[in-house]
Image (cartoon, rainbow, N blue to C red):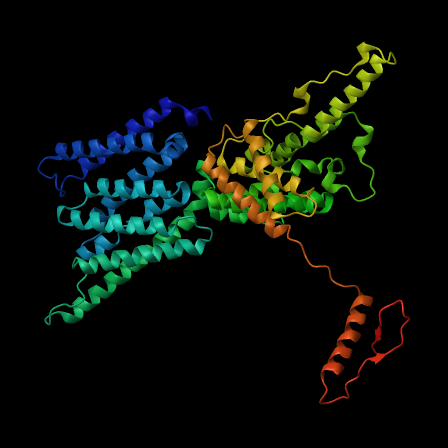
Length: 531
C-alpha cells in the first residue's frame, strides 16, 4: 500500500510515460507528418504527454492518487498508441487496402476499458489523449480522419458503457462504436458506396468488406473488453458494476448461514440494502456496491446471534439481563471485528471489508451506556444512604462503549452507515406516519453529523438532504398501513346482509318486503323491525 500511494513512484511513472511517448513518436516518424524532422515530432509527443500527466494529477485525484491506477491509465494510453502504429505500419497493404487497414484500428478499445474500470470522466480523458497522441503516429494522409473517428467512437463507447451491469451492454457499446466508425468513414468518403462503372463490382466488394470490418472491429473490441475485465480487476484491485452484480448472489455461504442462524439480522440487512441502494442512486454514488456491502455489513453477528434483539424470539429471555452493561457493550462492539475476520477468511472484496469495519464508525453504544449511568446513579443513592462503600462505585469510561472505528471514509460507506441506523430505529415506530418517519430520519442523520461520524466521507450537505429524502420515501413504502380485513364470522354476516339488500332493491323480480311497525311504549321512540 505504501508503494501504491508513494509520490516518488508516481513521479517515476509520469517521467517514464512522457519519455516513452516521445520515443514512440520518434520511431514512428518515417511516414508521419514529422518525416522530415523526427525530433520535432518527439517534442510534440513530449509536450502532449506532459499535459496529460498534469491534467491527470490535478483533475483526477481518484485515479491519480493510486499508482496502480496510474499504471492502468498511462500504460493503457501508451499501449493504445503502439497498437495504432503497429496496425497502420505492419498490416500488409496488398492483403488489406488503405481503407480496410484504417478500419482495423481499435479506436474505442482503451477508452472503453478505462470508462468501465475507472468511470466516465476517466474514459473521456482517455478518449481525448488517445486521439491526440495517436494522431502523432498516423500516416499524414490519415491524421485528420483518425482524429475525427477516434474522438467520436471513443465518446460513443464511453457514454454507452457508463454504469455497465451486464456484459451484453458492453456488446451494445461496441456495436454503437462500430456504427459510428462506419458512418464517419462513409461521410468522409473513406468508404465509397457508389463506385464508378468501370470497377463497380470490385468497388462494391471493397465497400462491403470495409463496412463489415468497421462493425466487426466494434464487436471485437467489446469481446476483448469483456474478457480482459476480470484480469484487470484482479491486477489493479478494482471492481466494476458487473462484478458487484455477481457478488449480490444471496446463495453465498455467509449469507446462507445468516438466513439460517440469524434470520432477523438477514432481514435487517436486506432492508438496509434497499435503503442504501436507493439513496446511493439519488446522489450518484455506486448503488450496486452499496447493496452488496449492506448484505454483508452485519455478518459478525453470526458468532453470537442471540445477543442481538432482532434475533430474539418472542418470549425468549434476553441474555443481556445477566450481564453488566460494560460486558454487553463489548459483545455488541465485537461484531465488527468478528465480521472483518469472517470476511477476510472468506476472501470477500476489500471494499466490503472496509464498510464492515466502518459502518458504525467510532459511535457510542447508547443503550448500554445509559444503562450503565442509571446503575451508577442507583449505586450513588445507596452510598448517600450509607448502604454502600464509595470505593465500590463502578467507573464508567465512555471509551468502553464506543466502536473502534474508523469512521466512514467513502460516500458508499457513509450511506450504508446511515441506512443501518435508520432501519434499526424504524422498527420501534408505532403507527408510522410520514411526519414521524421524517422526524426520525432527520434526528438520526443530524445526530451522526453532529457526532462527527461523517467528517471523513465525501457526503456534502446537499447529498445528505437527498439521502434523507430517499430514506423517507423508501420507508413510507415499506411501513405503509393496511386495512383490517374482517374475520370469518363478520364476512358471513356481511354476506347475508348483502343478499338481503339485493332482494329488497330488486322489486321487479321479487316482492318487496316492507317493514312492519310494532307498538312501542309511550316513553320510548317507535322502533322498526326489518324482516
